[in-house]
Length: 329
Ligand SMILES: NC(=O)c1ccc[n+]([C@@H]2O[C@H](COP(=O)([O-])OP(=O)(O)OC[C@H]3O[C@@H](n4cnc5c(N)ncnc54)[C@H](O)[C@@H]3O)[C@@H](O)[C@H]2O)c1
Image 1 (tube, rainbow, N blue to C red):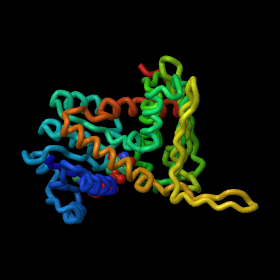
Image 2: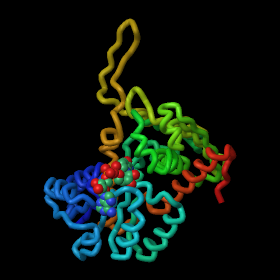
Image 3: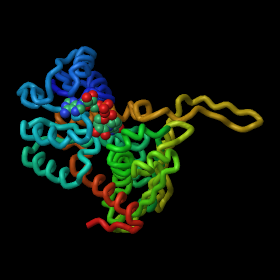
Image 4: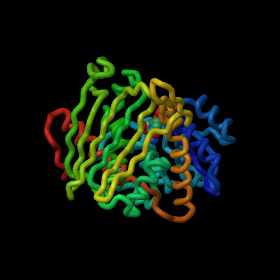
């Protein structure tokens, strides 16, 4: 039985603690939060002990940590957890700075500890099936990838100010999905964006509506469309066009009822947001992590995938600021 410590008892910490209750071969033994009340609440909910993050990392009885604290705390927790020999599940983004992620890679690889970056969308049944069927050759060679990703409504401007911007906070998931579906590294990035949803987001120096175009060395192209607003629910779709056909994953709706009358066909909105839409993906992601620890396989996506997505996000931010196409080294 693997003993797991959860660091951060907020939104995503609760999701991962609940997933672990459903996964064989692992249990949550300890949780930590900067706010003791938050740690106590989750600890009593899952039958674990509330401890400090330092105590969890130092405990010889704990095999792995799940880092679900705010992004600016990931670096220190990764460094100390890796040095203590803990397996690490770290939420995305690994860090806001590619250089700091490179430092984490050094520490993690020197310690030889397993590391999973929390790009949960790879574990969504729809996107995972698209990936598997491309790998099986069902659409031939991939040529064009289209990713549509739109939140139901924008977060508060206070969040935007510390988020690192749309490319590093939101489109980072799509940059990882682009790499997952393209099957090749990205070499060129162009991005544009506007503040069309909330002018205050523009005043805070960010955009809420954006498009990025990514190109690989062999010329495969991916276009990503993001908005902080979608009136019909959380819009999460992908289409891949290949030499022998296309494959796409559509939105998951609140229910599968359709009504038809003289005005046409109507069905339910897309599931509201990430907690609903990706509930199954978070569970599958945790099952993969625990399975890797039990079997000795390396978790995927790993820390280098976290870096690759961050490098693309940085390039997109630079392209938006300068209006030029950014070549990746
Ligand atoms: N993969 C996904 O779909 C997904 C979804 C949401 C959030 N995230 C990521 O998860 C991380 C947390 O996001 P959230 O929405 O759960 O935030 P949150 O604010 O809801 O929760 C974070 C918790 O961490 C606690 N905390 C802060 N500093 C700490 C420290 N040093 N030690 C222990 N606890 C500390 C806070 O008190 C808070 O309870 C972020 O990196 C975010 O980008 C990923």
